[in-house]
Image (cartoon, rainbow, N blue to C red; front, top):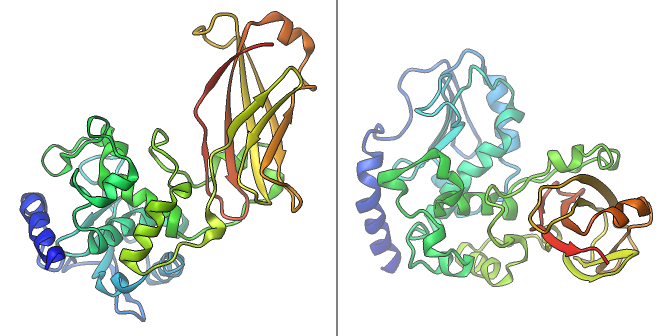
Length: 335
């Protein structure tokens, strides 16, 4: 009964925004279509997307973890043109349970939409199990630690693309990508070229706490959805525990095959822009514990003698899943 009341609250907020959609959210005129074994229709309104590409897109899409909500998805539409914003690649309609992918004439391969489609499905997942998540009093927003003043709660009547990362709906959708989205391996050789850190799957809002270590939230989502999060994907932000003239030590997840890049910026005054930059790399092995050590020996001693401060941060990527993030910057006085 509670969820039914929550559903009507959602309709009250969303109807003015969603009323422009057709009854089932699917176009009448289209180029081609494919109906999946589960009965979900993939529809192409772009000549760049034939049936074979729709099948490949489905194969990638179905790798995302899903539960009872999967059968309620009506369809996925490839629109050849742009949405109101040229930057938008996808949208979800909670009224019709449909996903639309835009700019199909430009993005012509299934891989171009993989993460976008997972994100949009995250909206479907969220509205099925957590219908009040976009409201500030919801249990999800409480456990997610969303501050009222730092979050935009007005998406349905005052949506601004530049504030995309601040809306609770978008935060939840990206949480789904990290907790349930399909993963992929990253080749070790791409670590030292930095490619691994550029292609990682990360949350759009890097100012939020890390959802991959929020155990209370994860357990809540699992209870409500009856869908388990694989513990192998959980990963904590590195925490600086010790600094001396020779080394930096961080507490990390005890996990193999994770790449870390230490970013160092040297400067004279505490708030002065960086004058010199360095990067150090480390990849955990099967025998690695929960302590990560970066030796500063390879940095010229003249650098430490020249500057008074250094600012550090750590980029992280799990090479087994491609999931990762960047830590907050920390300013240290050089010893």
